[in-house]
Length: 169
Ligand SMILES: [Zn+2]
Image (cartoon, rainbow, N blue to C red):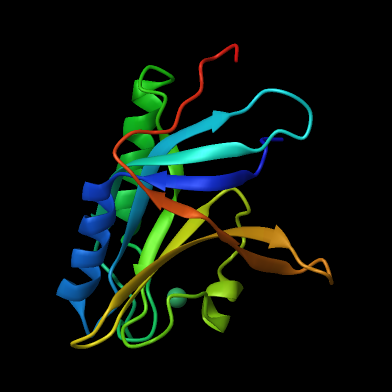
């Protein structure tokens, strides 16, 4: 079992691309996939840090795109094939996905919770407000009090260099 991510780092260009995509698709939800690396810290109880290196836009195929999202599955399949072909060479994997909440909070909705069935995937949510600010947040799926899935906020840090530590430090 992989250590849960404790922190998510995203390149400034990738972060800006997500915010631009959310504004461009407004008032509909945008969506896509997040590719990156998972870096573990050594030792017991160690948490892992994720680094988003690429964002892959996908068409929102949901019939009610102003309120819901459904990723084009062909984009998902093509990405998994590409990552499998690359193997461990690039060290990249599917980290999660993103979507936007036009004129709503950049926080998981009740519908999002119904789709939170994979605890290994990170969610990024962008909340563009018409003529206003655009928030961006990251979430991971954990087991809640009742054993049902729940979202937990994940610190999202925009930076162009991953704050790496020497391997044996
Ligand atoms: Zn949502």
